[in-house]
Image (cartoon, rainbow, N blue to C red; front, top):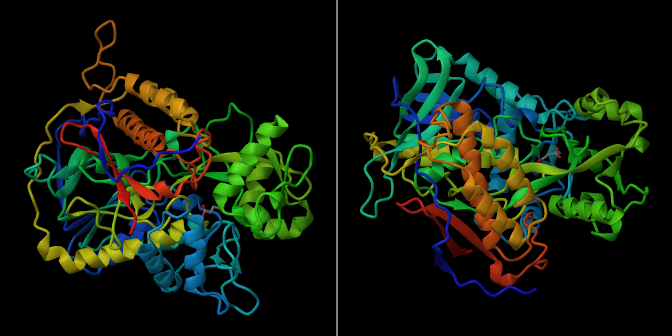
Length: 577
Ligand code: SIN
């Protein structure tokens, strides 16, 4: 099947999904005030908070769980930066553009790769201890899609944990400083906005509503007011049945930004990691990642007949870009009638594997697998959201005062598929830029009074979560079709979202509480991904339409989604620069 060239512009078909513009929640019972409110404590949120602390009088850092939680802690492989004299930002730029399948914003990528090395050295100055070689220089390794050794790692395969440890230690060291307040166990409910514009869309951001679990004065739902709000809330893994992401990754930031009027981009580009430990089709939730770095050190992929298949697929074989490897595995699984493939690291030897990959070695051992002597069963699972809240190269979204950094953002550095180990780097580089931009423009950002958002409030019962995850996995999953995506949208539309919905015996279906707010966010994110995936009638990067198997130059554009004032999801086909 061939595609028809899409006309640039706006589409809002009568059938466009309708989503609520705020969550049902009690009125705030407490208020905290700051100049800048940072939401999230991964590499992006911690970096933004530390940079802002020295530049603006009052910073409030809020995080959904404890400071040391979230996706950064789980990152194994590393952080990419052209540090070796034989490497260059230009080579890193080219690999990033190639992985991004024609949809990257080259200007944003240039910022990423040129500022990345300095930011990584600053991490060392902040106390992060990276693995070094005999000469004391930082050891660099390779992952899929990279033509040079440029992956910095720590503790072998515990890079994110080490970075988070170092940054959290810096925050802890200034916790008594009156210029910074930290609130943990705080779920962001909605972004607060000022008076709407003439078009009826929400006004500038002026804070967030939060639900805090039990700490003295800051308990229950409250309002954190600020002149600038930085969303650094991470990813969306829990939209799917299984993911490498932790339980906190319920898409809270992207959904709240959408409800606040922000434009989302590239949301159909969901990355499925090729080598996630396969433990049976019934296994759900967070799954064990087997880092791409294992292939970087020479591990091979074999089908269940023991045949190595990647050299026939791509010149880079097992180190082809991540989407290429994931799709090759899915096809091999289908053609062999199996449900997984094997990762073979046995030839690397027990002592090397134990020393280079201590975390993976231990996690596999907990599942009874000795990676030094046994094959590892793997299959693709959700890993990363390449799209997100559209943000420019200083993190500004389309809503004044609202910034987005890290995985929640769509800066254009990933395009259709993120290059391995560019995610920690993106969080680091763009959080640093956003903090500097906010501090330079603080005087232009007045503290506005929040204005209630009109329209119905949404609340989806937590009992619907498994159903929504099944719909997302079957619809906008690894392989997509038009009919499958239409069915997913219809099924999502049947999920009751009205906060006043009642059971047959008259009880309210959902109560305003954490599990319900998260499930509502999961529902809204599943809807926007399904909608964009249905619109994009081609295969590109992480978006595979089996009914449109070719990449089509006419689709080399970004799909941007936003809610109109009535809550209809509007899709704009935006040409790339
Ligand atoms: C991995 O270690 O394979 C994941 C790294 C990444 O997602 O960039």
